[in-house]
Image 1 (spheres, rainbow, N blue to C red):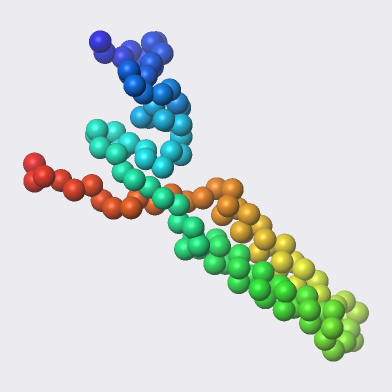
Image 2: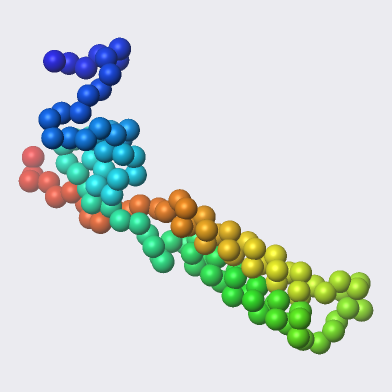
Length: 119
C-alpha cells in the first residue's frame, strides 16, 4: 500500500514511532539516510570548535579577571575603569556561553562512509 499525503505514517511491525524519517526520534545516533542504509553517528565532543573557542575565551577571562582583582592599578590609563576586570568577566561569560551552547546543541558526525558493493 502506497503512502499518500493525507494518510498518517504508521510504524511497521517491530518499529517504534517517532518524528524522524526512519521512525526514530529526531537526533537518534543511528539515523537512516533514506536509501535503506543506516549510518552510525556520534557527537563531536571535545573536538567541537565551540568547546575549543569557549575554553580559550574562559581561560583568558580567568587570567584577566585575576589581573583585574590582584594586579597593578592602571585606572588612570583606562579612564577610571578597571579594564582587565571587566574584560575578564565578559570573556568568562562568552566562553561559558560557547561551552553551554556546545553541550545543549551537539554536532553529530558520521563515523564512516557507507561501503558500496560496486553496483
